Length: 136
Ligand code: NI
Image 1 (tube, rainbow, N blue to C red):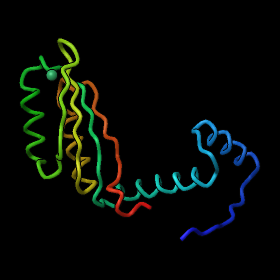
Image 2 (cartoon, helix red, strand yellow):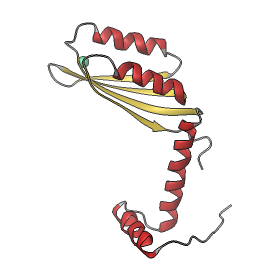
Image 3 (cartoon, protein in one colour):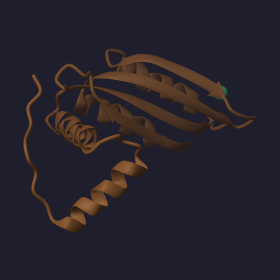
């Protein structure tokens, strides 16, 4: 059921918000506010160690001795969390790996940190998202 409520705010803050929503291509304030609330709720799921989804992207030097092996080992340690991974040989030296993960927030962060800290990993990013079950 759709419910309405009124928000009061400073004029300058509202002007800035209207600039933001037009830059983000929202058609109205309501959808923009809903998205901001959803985004806050997703952050809460991660902070509260709830079941979440994520995408880890890794760029690494595949000539670094043993690195590929170590990355595989870490992913096997977290096989319950790793759903799928895709590997792209970007050029002679660099590989890109994209890993889709699901599980308790803390275990996903642990997995990310264990890969990020390996020598030869040039960039490791975790995109934190949601299972969508509790976000409406
Ligand atoms: Ni490769």
